[in-house]
Image (cartoon, rainbow, N blue to C red):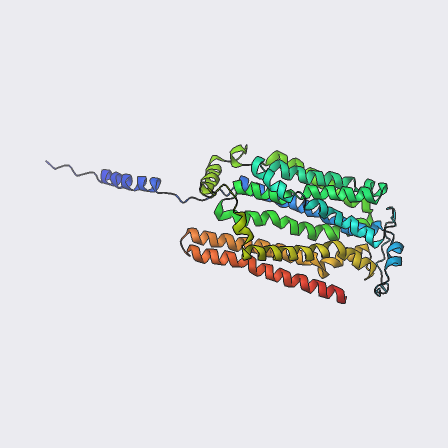
Length: 400
């Protein structure tokens, strides 16, 4: 009688049982969801929010050129030679239905500068309020208020200079809360390894808004009417506000459609990020030379940028003799908006490089010291390039 031949199937089954649990129970890498994550929806909505924000901020710089009777400004300009009229003007007839105002150069300066009087007031209070109550409503109503006030700009201009100056100051109050509110929101939403990428996506909208709104405002003024500059951008701001209130939440815990896995990923990554120190070390901060270097550099950067942004359209109209359409299209090539287009590209590129460095750190391909040194050096080098770019713009504009 033959002895039974052992069935090889059980051994195969045992081998299968040995392999299968190992594959099933192997620890999976902690990666973030990639399919429409809520934090990236927030980043892109913030991107369009800052796009609208800077469009509302700079549209008056172009529209003012078409609002003012050029004979009034020309009579006051006695300090420098003006360029001759261009030999080959654009053939398209300029829409002349917009009302003209007899505002001299000093009055125009008050109108353009009034925005920043309100803008500087709400910066610090907004940071305090956003840290206590969240940034969603603060940011949303800040941009909504600016959009609504923008719609009333033509009416305020009819009432007089005082009404227009007050309106622009109120717009500045609304826009002053935006950056502190956005910082507060990202403190609850941005995982450390994605913080640079998410913030860069958000704030890149400011550069793109400047690049798009300046030539677009000039085209609207030339072919339609300067009042439509304020109506169109104001309506876009209101539409953005509706989307913002509907789709965004202050924290991952209160978001209605976020996946449980993404919520856990964000909360676990931020669990050890908050400082246990309750008081702000004001004295060491005020004594820090590095802090004062950043303050001075940022102040100088913004002063030169906003000087070009607010005054260059008028300079190109009254001195260089470009009309409203030519000036709006040429300005991105000769002034700050062109540099903002480059800044937008650089901003996105640096965000990608920073995210890649963080990813390499997570894989232990590079150590933390190398990552921190590389990330810290990127903003410093780009800041230096930005200052050289502003200096070049000033000198070359004067030579035109």
